[in-house]
Length: 150
Image 1 (tube, rainbow, N blue to C red):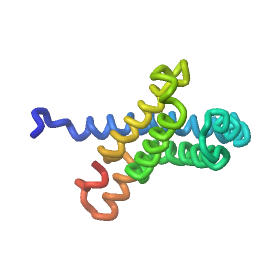
Image 2 (cartoon, one colour):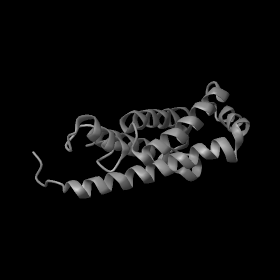
Image 3 (tube, rainbow, N blue to C red):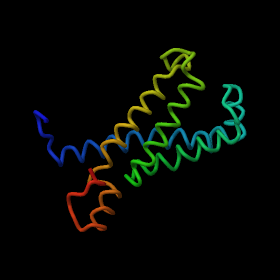
Image 4 (cartoon, rainbow, N blue to C red):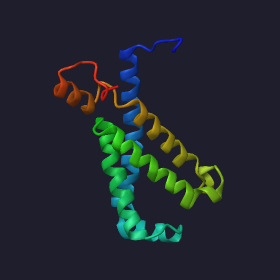
């Protein structure tokens, strides 16, 4: 039982802001791997950090972060991309960042842990009504109160 019932409109606005903020960070990191560093540089960096199969891992990370980040911004297939991005971040914690402690300034896990937690929260709550998931669910069912849009 909830003691305080959240306002639906406010919840939708907060989910939109969370999705856009989280999606923007993932999108930026994916584009950094693809464009700024280049895939050869990203794979080289992954190899230096001990990431298994560094070239394949670099491509998977770059594409997942770019496409997944854009999908979160749009609120499209939100539970799927949220889970995939969270799994990627948890793998980054375990493979690369955990031995370095928490602080990001020491290549620690604070940023990737926060990104994983944010992705899990958005995935659990859904995209909200102000999303493509919400629009598509409404069209598919004709119902304003759909499970997929919550």
